[in-house]
Amino acid sequence: MTDVTDAISEFVRKGIAAQDAADRAAGRPTALELDHETFIDELRSRLGAELAAAIDATRRAGRTLAELAGPVYDVEYAEGERGSDLAALIETARRELTAAQAQLVR
Image 1 (cartoon, rainbow, N blue to C red):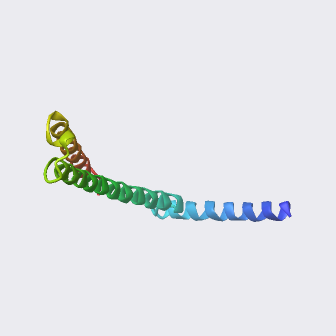
Image 2: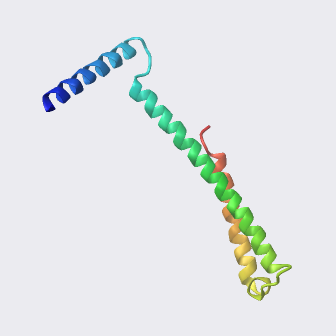
Image 3: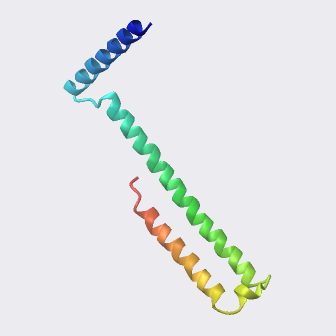
């Protein structure tokens, strides 16, 4: 069984090599290059989605903090520096994430 498997594997390898050589000679990208480009596109898309989700999460966190410091009046966040410091950190994170999103390759 291994001899047959090895023979099939070798046949496939030679076929792929021949196709790659033909693609290169014709100025076309090889299958591996196309797969790599597809993988890059998928990762770029995922990065964009993850940054968008992080920006949305910071907005929601800011609104939740505003509720705690405002109508709910959680003393820990409504009085003293803790609430304002946290609000500033959340806003800074949102701005930094938005700046990162602007740097994405599209």
